[in-house]
Image (cartoon, rainbow, N blue to C red; front, top):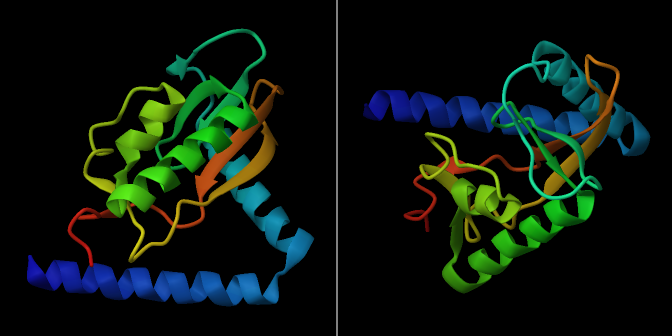
Length: 158
């Protein structure tokens, strides 16, 4: 188990180094274009013929959580409000789970969302990245991604 954990940490660090270098080279619109294209590919691979979580009134738009691969209905403002709530939780307790974020969006947690999260001392605050894409049904869709993905053992990190 220790060897697997060490290998995972090395791989994760290499990926982070690669992402950091790519973001240094591709600044501004080109960087956003890469993220938008990745989001579009993910939406194309996962059309909303499965579960779409519908909450609230008709002013909400189709959204896609790139981390869990789920569609839901929300507004940009509600998603930003959830981001602020998670960062408030981290300010008071130093950590917050992915389930906390999903609760703030009023969507159901996943089987692993309580196992991962953010720690203000290690991962920093939650920061979201948005891309506007088209669903395979040619409907506008707001793709939501995490700049820093939630990590396991978030509540025990120092």
